[in-house]
Amino acid sequence: MDAATIMVLVLCAGVAALLTWFEINSRRNDAREKQRSTPDPSGLEPLQTEGQIKEGQIKVESNTRNKKAA
Figure 1 (cartoon, rainbow, N blue to C red):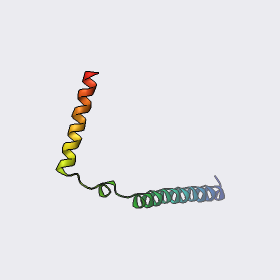
Figure 2 (tube, rainbow, N blue to C red; figure 1 turned 180 degrees about the vertical axis):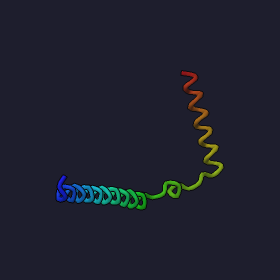
Figure 3 (cartoon, helix red, strand yellow; figure 1 turned 90 degrees about the vertical axis):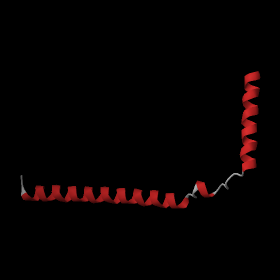
Figure 4 (cartoon, one colour; figure 1 turned 180 degrees about the horizontal axis):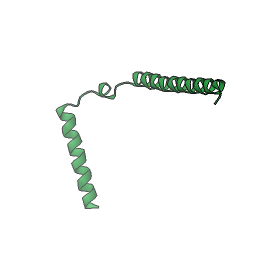
């Protein structure tokens, strides 16, 4: 092979590697920004009180009774 051909192949490989690195880096940055922009779901809902928990249990129990009866 000619020295010029080898030089062209090396440069093409270098450019391809550089473009791949840019694309990977760009996707990482996009994912990082997206993760920062989405709110934390655990911080949105307040904790349930004991009364709310009991009400939920009663609703579930009545729903299961209705399904069994039907």
